[in-house]
Image (cartoon, rainbow, N blue to C red):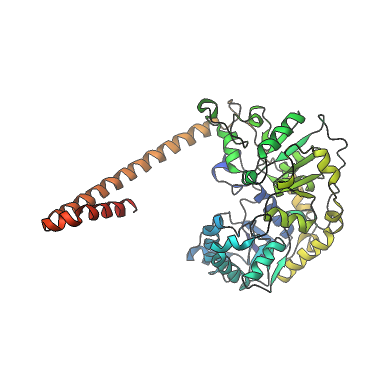
Length: 467
């Protein structure tokens, strides 16, 4: 039995409540993370494997590394756009852990994040961290799996000219070497069930406000599937925007029309997410996994590309897309569908799947489609679970989580009081230290005090405040 430790927010078979999803951030700030980690879990699960979720936070201690070395045979790390400046701290922690491991470490589909122009020079501040991570992984595996052409060329520029394989994202191989043909939505009009998805980071590229407004005006059955933890927290906790008068152009506040009309959902589990999207006619927007999820469910979608992470996956898998920067906000979904060509995505899927499983083979990993039951047991077990539906706007009634809400608010209040007490104590200590330094200065020669006293005091104050 091969014991696999996988980096994921949770096991696909763990039924978590809305409260647990939010408090523990099981989605890693983005629901899309669970889509590819669940797919990886399904692909790697056979009668000869045992898979354990490591969670998304990294504990890089010697004790944890020893525990992993003793308990597991391989550490599998599915990643998204990990090569980005904001992920540097987390990447360094992961490198520290990997460097202490004596078991194989296999990375499934890591990506670099740049603009749609593929300019990776802006990644300069993390080059050293990326090289450290890739070096540590390649010392423990046959090759490194990356999402697409951009990431491969970036690593080549850093000196990794061998042992880097373009494999895409595991989520696209949820069904193995087959891929569902998207249904024909017919005429997309006011009677159609349409889903839109949007990224906060895309507001600098395209008119997200206009995109949402036109969709809301055209489609009475519209749903906006958000994916961030921040969106889930607003839906679960509510906010004070109605009282404060705070208005948001991007839909992230209860006063935004999409929230007011209860059109917003945040998926908490990949299976229910796909089940829900299977009931819609068409999906479009800037989220890569927000558009892969409906495709896996047989619903046509089109990606509005705004950066390299979405573009390289669309190009690799042949997912229909168009550039957000040149897409008018009033674009009609009918036009997007008519221009979409799914043939490359469907016809090239088996070849891409064979490339993916070849990567797994070279790294000593079996897959359920070649070495198992094709995921039948996984699907059967998953289908028997009562998994949570996507989160919607809380209407203020007791939905079974009211007691938790009050408890969590009290907990946050207590934590805040404790932090204030700690900060007050530190401030008092700094004031005492400053007074002591000023007393020492007062003992200096009077002429020196007149000459350097104020400057020294200002410097001392600055240094104490910076601590």
